[in-house]
Length: 504
Image (spheres, rainbow, N blue to C red):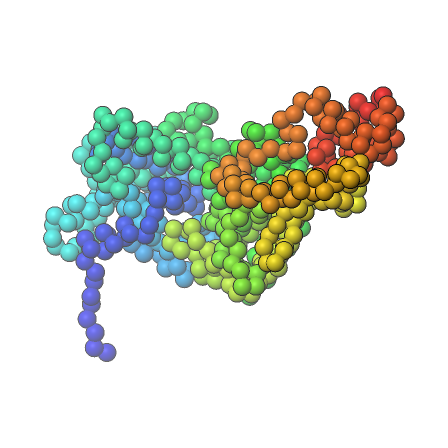
């Protein structure tokens, strides 16, 4: 067979490896995958600001690598994605160490040692390779000048690996060390990184005996805290049944969760459950591979009928956990960054069937503020507003059969037309667009009925309604008190009403 060897240019290929689209967060997470695969129990991340001379270190206490293993690990494509991996192996393409590191820095130095071998060092330096103009893949065996101190931490360990990223042109090019604005932006990214790692590795971090990640320090105050997307510790969170979807010789495990409505949470709980990116961004599927979160809130491009599912306010309480294994990477089209996943068609159809029910229940709880979604509603529950379609338009009408409104209209006698005219004015001027904008931009500021009222204001309103319905409120009947408490406006204030009128 006639052929020729056609090796790629080292400088061009290494520059190309930088273009996978990593952010700081996804790059550091990818490097942590290597530490977890190496059975590390502790990972220390250090980010130091010095303008264009800033640097990053990721050090672990894993099994480490011998000199031969390190040399192999530094090769681009060091392992075939077709190779069978151990169950706990979070890698796949043999590229993560290189692509993640070089996406941030022009100099990647790795030091590693095992219990049976001394410290070995290898470095890819893009500027050095470009200067040689020899098209050679020159993997250096030493760190940059003055990098020894940054690598020193690994020397005091029995085993482990340290990754040193210098010349951070993607993060710090053009910055000035003594610029407060540049410095503040750098440390703002560290805050974001801490939140991201707490989300991606929350299953590992849930128990300190399994994994600890420290950022810019080694004390408990520097530990990354896990963030559970499913808020499973809260009693009002509703877990749904687990289902298993077979595909070939593999099984995808799925479980939905409906999170509590804001009215069921304290402000601190609401902010915690909202997560790093907020409630709307965190709805949808959470895809895990070996306990490592790949996709953190997405509807995965799935659809029901002709409408593709998108992040919408009324589905924000729905979160669905999906577990796959590393045997399923190809089926799920896992990308190099481990941030995208696309389910096989048969699995996708099963996910749609399961998620449709979870979404419907989440929407119900959202619509009724967590009060009516989990039980059968009775006819006594009175809602003031009705949503209707009239001539193809969504409209909102006051319910003339609402007990209080009906009683009010009956009392007016011949003046009922005046009330109807006022009702019509209110109905035709409902500020739908403003309500929608306010709900979308500041959902946490939306108030519940009588949410800011004092107890006395609730009692006064209830007394007025009781008088309209019965006439004499000196001794309202138990049935009438029950009916008032089932009205939408008083559903959150039953204790106050029963305590006052039940004791009269």
